[in-house]
Image (cartoon, rainbow, N blue to C red; front, side):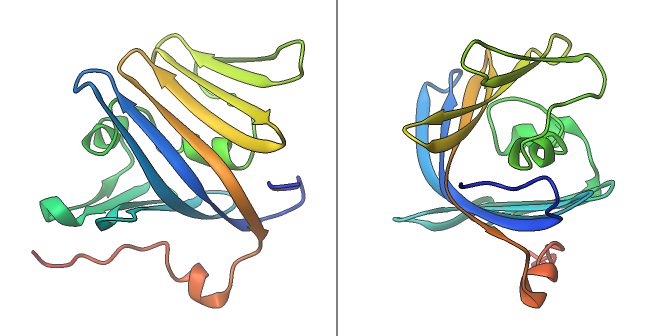
Length: 178
C-alpha cells in the first residue's frame, strides 16, 4: 500500500501534482516531495524537470514559511489561508494538507465528510468553497482539492514511513536574504 498507516508518526510522499488555474487558463504538471511529522509539521517541495526548484512551503505548528526562487519571494509568519494563493489558484489553510497526506477527514469548522458507494472519502467546506477527496485509480492514490478557481491533484507514487535525522531538520526554510 502507498500511504500511511494509522500508527505512523512521520513519513515522506513523492509523486506528481497537477495544478489547474481557471482564472489564468493554465495547467501545470510538476513533481512534489512532502515530508511530515505529526501532529503539525509538513514541508512540500515542488520541482519541474525543465526548471528545477519551483517552490517550497512549510507548516510548523502556527508558522508558515515559503520560498519561490523565480520571484525571489520568501515569507515567514502566521499560518493564513490567503498566503496559499501566492502559490496556488485559490486560498485554503495549509494545515489541510496534513489531513490530505495523512488520509484523515477534516473535522474543523464547517467541513462535512462522507463516503460514496465505492468507499471513497470526500470532504467539503461551504464557507471556503472547497472540496477535498481521496481516491485510488488502478491502485494509485490521489488526493484532490477542488475549488471554482482551480484544482490541485496529488498523484502519490511512493510513501516511506519515518524520517531520517536530516529530513527532520528540513521543516524550517531559511531566509535566502534576497
